[in-house]
Image (tube, rainbow, N blue to C red):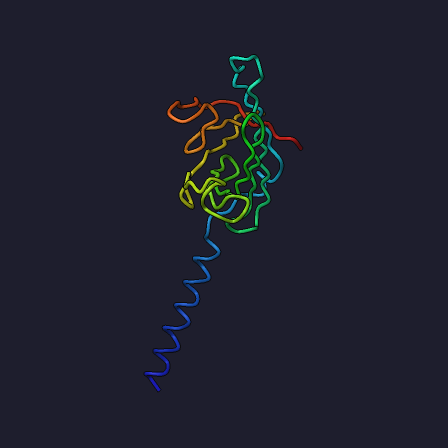
Length: 155
C-alpha cells in the first residue's frame, strides 16, 4: 500500500509541475495585442529610386510560439516571419519562430536566424513605442541601428 501511495504521489507531483511550467511559459501580454507599422527610409539608389521597406507587425497573444506575424515588404524585400512575442505590459520581445512557409531557412535556403533568437524588443515610452533592434536590423548587416521610435501602433 505504501509503495502504491508513493508512486501516486510522485505522478501527481510531476503532473502538477508540468502544468505549472506550461502556465508559466512567457506570453505576449494583451496590452501589446494589435498592429504595428514601421516604414524604413533607406534613401535612394544611385539611379534615384527610393529605398523604402515597410515592417508590419501583428501581435495576437495566446497562440503559443506563433502569436505574432512580421511582414517585411518593399525595395528588394518580401518576407514573412512567424514570431513569438513575450514580455510584460511595459516591454515585449519578438523572437524568430519560422518563416511564413514554416521553414527555418529563407527562400534561398539560408538560415538567417535560429528558432527563439531575439529579433527586436519594444518598450513603452509614454505615448511612443521604443524599439531596440537585435538580430533583425533595418539598417543592414554589420551596422547597428540605434534604439528609438520606429513602430507606431495602428489601432
